[in-house]
Picture 1 (cartoon, one colour):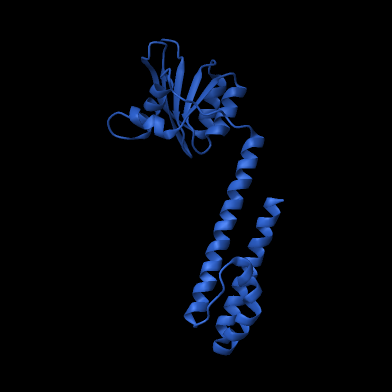
Picture 2: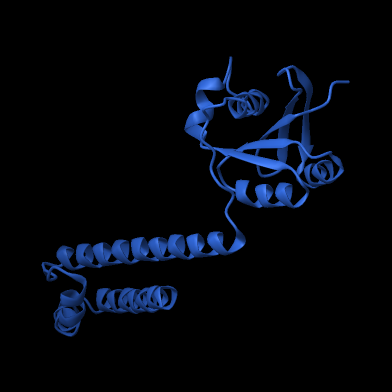
Length: 199
């Protein structure tokens, strides 16, 4: 059997497809492995170039491969797509990743450290919380509009106007006032969580 030089891995949650080639680009191996078996495979393999799409979990697997002595090449998905032949499936994706990794002009994504990913995760959580806060504010404005009440523009202006708006809402619908109060408490919790991840 020819010596493997590049292995393309199509990452997934549970089942991973591998496509390995030799120095001439000829296929040496095409297999699929479970998550635990992939880890075992990488531990047993001689150091080679391992290529993957730069997607979810790629940096985790990239760090493991580097730890085991493999050279890692992460490729942005849009650069792999042109190399997919025939129907798109996991097996063909692994083959396309392997082929893209062999291109001399290909741009590779650096493997992120655990610390870099932690900072990135923090930013993503903050963005998620801000999105939830915006959705909550929009929902609160919509609820008020249904009762003929207009909330001022801006998050701080809305917050300052809440006492008066709640009084007006209580006169119109006590039940809706309770719902609005609960939503305002949720908004306050989101504000606190955003402040916690920002500082």
